[in-house]
Image 1 (tube, rainbow, N blue to C red):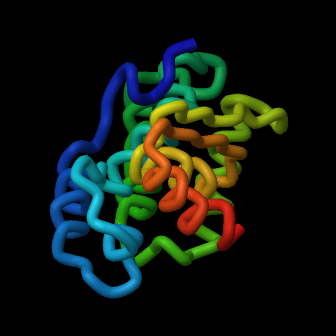
Image 2: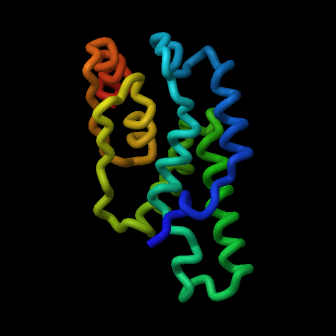
Amino acid sequence: MKKLIEVAMPTEPINKAASREKSIRHGHPSTLHLWWARRPLATARAVLFASLVDDPSEHPDKFKTDDAVKAERQRLFDIIAKIVNWDNSGDEQLFAQALDEIKKSVGDDLPAVFDPFAGGGTIPLEAQRLGLKSCATDLNPVAVMINKAMIELPA
């Protein structure tokens, strides 16, 4: 079963959101500690979502024409464009909608995300934001403390 990320991604809104994150200084996790290899949260959020959601072309019974596939793919792209926007990061309804889309593809038994070299914690943080269980570790004790402060303690 092909996932959305294997077929197409809306790179323009993802790139725009990732670039904007660099200038956010109030309330953004990047202000917790300067991490030398910080990955944009928006990109991780989009990649996790698109890695779990089926591409509409994999469901010819639901989307019978190319136009129907394109329309459904655009609807999923619109969700991605909304979830990558930092201003929407606290929108519980939006993330519930994103989780529902994930469940349509993977079922109610959601996969856990394990990041053995989590560094600044971008992947486990965004997995948690999407409603997935996440587990993170790192060899660097500073990275472990950052992950505890961003992921474990607030949860």
